[in-house]
Amino acid sequence: MTTPADILVAKLGKFVRLGQPEEDAIHALPMTILHVKPNRYLIREGDKVSRCHLLIDGYACRSKISRHGKRQIVSFHMPGDVLDLQHTLLPCADHNLQTVTNTTIGRIAVRDLSALIKEFPLIAQAFAMDVLIDASIFREWVLNVGTRDAKSRVAHMLCEFIARRQILGSDSAEQTELPFSQEQIGDATGLTAVHVNRTLRKISDEGAFTHTGRQYTIKDWPKLQNIAGFDPAYLHQMA
Amino acid sequence: MTTPADILVAKLGKFVRLGQPEEDAIHALPMTILHVKPNRYLIREGDKVSRCHLLIDGYACRSKISRHGKRQIVSFHMPGDVLDLQHTLLPCADHNLQTVTNTTIGRIAVRDLSALIKEFPLIAQAFAMDVLIDASIFREWVLNVGTRDAKSRVAHMLCEFIARRQILGSDSAEQTELPFSQEQIGDATGLTAVHVNRTLRKISDEGAFTHTGRQYTIKDWPKLQNIAGFDPAYLHQMA
DNA sequence: CGGGAGGTTGACCACCATCAACTGCTGTGG
DNA sequence: CCACAGCAGTTGATGGTGGTCAACCTCCCG
Image (tube, rainbow over all chains, first blue to last red; front, side, top):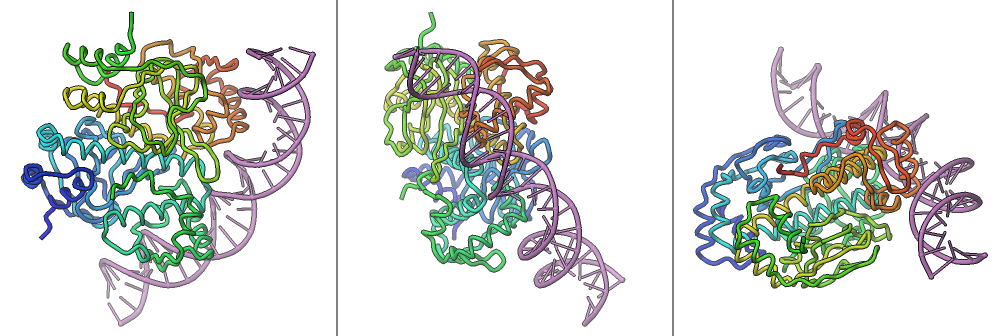
């Protein structure tokens, strides 16, 4: 049986080779399990945060709201991701944390997580690598919304989603359920839902994929990557 | 006399209270001083990196190139910033590092920097906070290019520049030299140089600032912040 | 004096936003 | 069981923001 702690062990194990003491310590980490419905806020910008959130199952995202009320999704997250590691050192939230689907969340006190990091340099290093890869993804997103046209942007988000699912190792590349509404895709790419709709149609007209609802079937992965200008190097995947 | 190491001590001292052992260790850090001309590459995307770069004097930026050849500047940097801390753990560069002005750079071997971090948890924490604030700034940039119109984007970049100069404590808010060409402002905001030009004129027509060349005089700081939708919280400044 | 980079201005147009209407699906309560 | 509400998705018409191309100017530096 896989416990919540196992998911964290698997995640960190992708970055460093954990020993038995580290694994034991992670299993001993006090964690409160929550089941959260879609589109709920876990944290709001400006909150003083004293608990971190491990995503155990489902999807989540981080978002910010501009002065004019537009939402920008700045990242999406998959099981194994710690959604707000920064709150171990920066207690004031600079963005929102929202669920996308039904999720299972493990809540960990900052104090406990900090203690773990202080005691085990290997774990600290793994978390540091995670944070640095996070930052690399943000840079790619700046590039995505700053320089690419609608077709490339949407295709790029799809590519990143597929590539990260593959790193998780949990499903086939060809068939995947994209959990986001077209409005959410728009908020992530800086487009309107209407234009996302038209853009998805254009890409699928070109034969890169087909979809019925949120079930996507990739027909031509190289073509999709080509439309996106996608190069997975920025994900810094190890294996 | 302020040495290059002093600049790093001052930077890290903003995050944690360094003791004498930490300061001594930073001063003992082997560092090669370089003087680099404007618009030179320090690192190119894809490079295997074994040295980190401390910006001692002048300005630098990080950039990425999209498949279609457009450059996106993803961050700009001021004296005291370590430009590529991530290379301590992720040796493959996912972006370019470029000088903007004449700069003085301190080059530090990754090995030496890693040793410093391993030996002094306080220094590790300060670097971690720096990396996390970096990530927060990237998120704000995603918001900036994703949701704001040209006027807000350009104003926001100006606001961030001024706010970060103020954190450095080195000059007055009202009068500042912006080291970027209009083309570089465009590459940072996802606009063309032509449109940046028109946009700067619009903002200054509204009385927020005046400029002759790259010398900017802020006439109405609240108005500029308002145009930008600027809230400095994302900089996580301490003092 | 000449060349080049950065800045400025004008004309034109494409991409994407906006507004609006309509469809289909799902869940819920009468 | 049906009626209805509400959300996500789809499609059309129209317009504005910002891109593109081009010319010209200024300033600096060789």
